[in-house]
Length: 207
Image 1 (cartoon, rainbow, N blue to C red):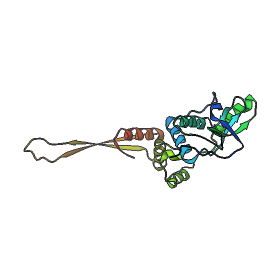
Image 2: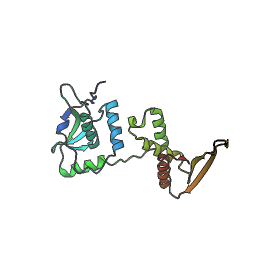
Image 3: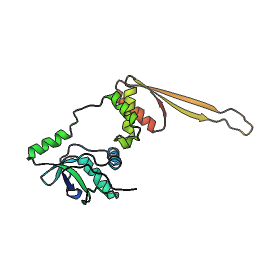
Image 4: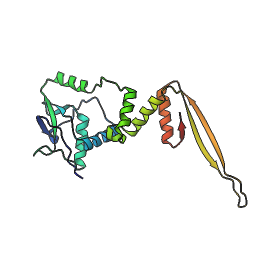
C-alpha cells in the first residue's frame, strides 16, 4: 500500500518542516478529532491549501491539519509534489500583525450551523465509518441521539441480574430479576450525557 498522500494543485508549496503552528491559535482539537482528520487526509488527500503568514511561515488557517500531517510523517507517510518531498500546498498572506490576528480568529469562527435533518441524511448516504468522514463515533452517537430524541425528557435504564437456583437435585428454573430506573431531566444536554455514560458502562439504556 502506497503511503504517498495526494496533494491539491496550487501555485505555492512550502516544506512541512518550515511551517510553524500559530502559538496563539484559539482552537484545540481532541485526540478523536485529530485521528479523524488524519484518516481523511490519508483517504482523500490534502485537498485544501493552508493559509500561511509571511512572518516565519506561521499558519493562520490550517493549524490542526498541519498537526495531523506532522504525525502522519512520523508514521511513514509522505507529501510529495513533482520533485518536492514533504511539502504542503499553501496560500501566502503578507499582512501586518493586526490583520494576521484577525484572520486567525475569523478562520476559526464557524459562522454556519448544522441543519440536523440534512446532516443526518448526508451522514447516512456517505456510507462510511464515522472517522473516515471526519466524525468520531461519540459525535455520531450524540448527534443521532439529539435529533431523534430531542423531545424526550426521561431515560429508562434496565439492568438484568440473573439468579440461578442451586442444589444437585434441584431442577429449579433460572430466575431473572429486572431492575428499572427512570430518570427525568429538565435539560436535554444532561439527559444525553447520562445516556451515553450509562451505555458506555454496559447498561441496557432506552430513551
